[in-house]
Image (cartoon, rainbow, N blue to C red; front, top):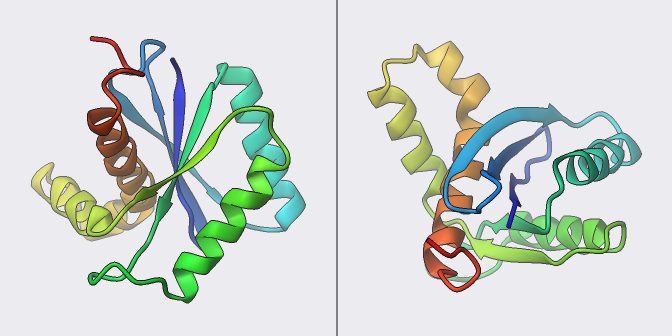
Length: 141
């Protein structure tokens, strides 16, 4: 089962996709938001071209589990995407995913400029890996 992970942001939208079996997550180039229509158009094309069966959008709850403005924006984005595709669009708690992604990129030896360009998609990998680990029945291994 191929799954697309999304780290939604106002400027960049980080992407990650699983292998066809849905066992491992790999970063994809982030999308830079220009217009709402172009963003959704690009996502729908990726979903179609890659044979994605589920989309997982990171939900940026506060550390105490509450909603924030960013949380509401991510929910609205997920709902808008769900209206455009015929596959499930799920939300996944993404607390600390960006911090973990930053640490991984730093550990890999990337300079700060390269870390910044890859951070959103690495955060999407974190979101997707969490989803994979919490949904073992959907991801046989």
